[in-house]
Image (spheres, rainbow, N blue to C red):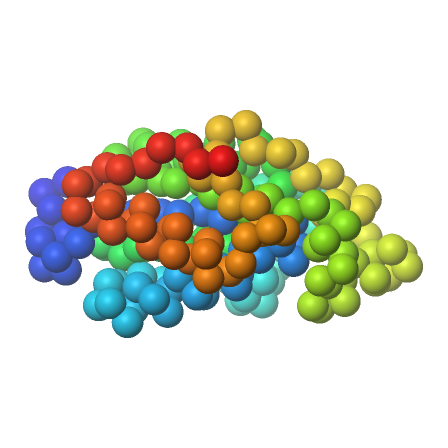
Length: 197
């Protein structure tokens, strides 16, 4: 704990993990990268961990069975705790479809005394399918992708999200601005979070 305090003092900021969960094409990564850009421009150390990118690297040995999905999230959680312990504002964009796995990553942080916010990027499946920037929903509907979240694999609505962003009727810029307000409040006061609907 003492080393963590020294790291935070060196950086002039406290670490924090913000975990964005939601369907594919709900806006998780777009918000995450937009937030990262804004924070970096304002001199805040932060890093965006994108679930899709991690599956091409550290998690490339994992498939899409429930067991592999849980292991994928566990690994992302471990990486996030390291970065947050170092003092970074760690932004994680990962579908994280199961409540059990969301609880696991929250517990990982709580056990280590690290702040953790779960952000539910709430967007109706129909809107996500209309967006479909990577064409994944079309492939899933055509049977080219199996176990695709929202189509033939379930997404469990978060039970205890700290913040909910409704991206069907809120712009990326508005979501980023809302998150920035919360983050700056947290950094200035150590804690400033109430559930937002």
